[in-house]
Image (cartoon, rainbow, N blue to C red; front, side, top):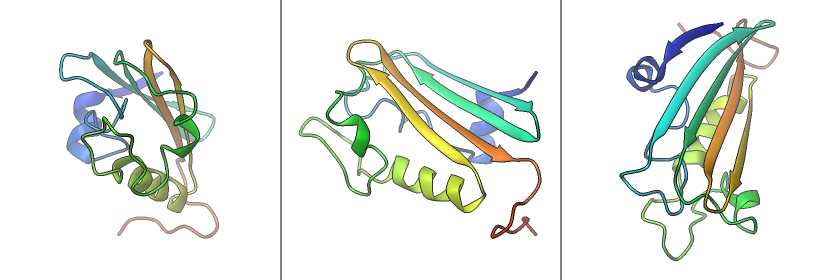
Length: 121
């Protein structure tokens, strides 16, 4: 069941922002779709773009700090920060991409705090 669209997620600063998805190689004209849903005690988020995708050899590294390719315009920090935030709240994050077909970033967060995490004030 959908909870909110991308506008809500952007206002809340939740998860990867549209400028982060599909790096390296996203172009401003690429379409970005964001979705959120609740399921089995977890919130599920996805951010999908229709950009040029991420090369298979780069995909395992997209969550590493400062990882960039020669044609990247970002800092190499966006997805690394997103990963650390998601993990700190007991969630999981993954990237899926195919060259020429875009990129999907999916992450989940528990609805209730888990051991080792704290509830927001």
